[in-house]
Length: 191
Image (cartoon, helix red, strand yellow):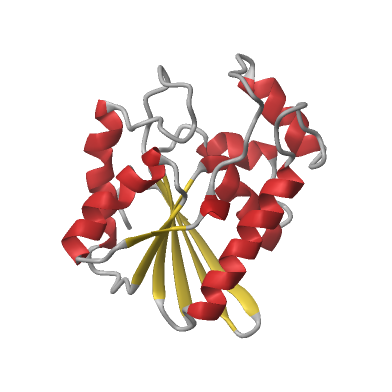
């Protein structure tokens, strides 16, 4: 069994509009400790991340405590919305979820985001079969992966997790593909 722990980044500093360099906010830095605490006993073998600073910084504390390097995979990056900042993110997201091929002139559609993220995941699964793996990721990128394995996951589910940062999704894989998925809200006590 291969276990993948997808870690959606903690809250970022939205005053920085550059996707690649946007850091975590002070609250995000504090909340990244929840990730390290959660992963501590998961026997993680390898760590991957999107190249974006907020994703890397969310898992950096755990990586340091586990003495594991963070392997950057460019295809785990977040969707490119457009060349500039858009103000009405809700309407834009709603339209993209209604039509996976919809995109702005300088952006990506959800089908493109899903294709490259699932391809990157497939490579990780092939190279690290039977391992426990962490992948630092983003809300939309992760949501397209979930949708790939559970096509009932849509816009309402995406909006339900939009404010949960960090957020964890564990997926279990065997030779038949994804055989289990658990969504974990680190802000709610475990039962």
